[in-house]
Image (tube, one colour):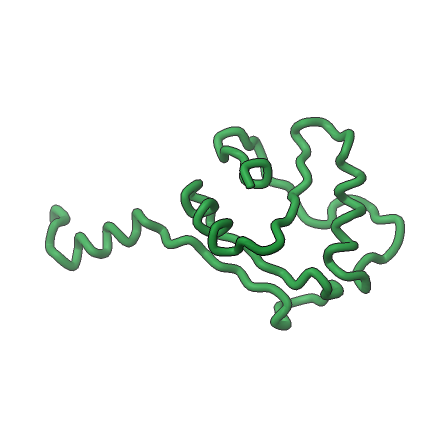
Length: 115
């Protein structure tokens, strides 16, 4: 899991989706197969380009690790589903709680914050 979730301080930028010209239309293929093309493409790429691998199973542990790293959250997708625009129940984004905001809100409720 550490290889998939590197130290955020080591990241200079985050990759965009679908920025490379694909050899064919991969949208009808299952997600697990669509991910093979960019993985192969980035095998010998510069270290600044990273392939975002996937984790099958271990969702709660993966979520806890992501939140401990103070990232926004995780996205879970159905590996056998073709690409479909929008969320048709094929993926779910689970955000980590913003602990700083929660602390501020609770502090305000108790009256601990200065005026």
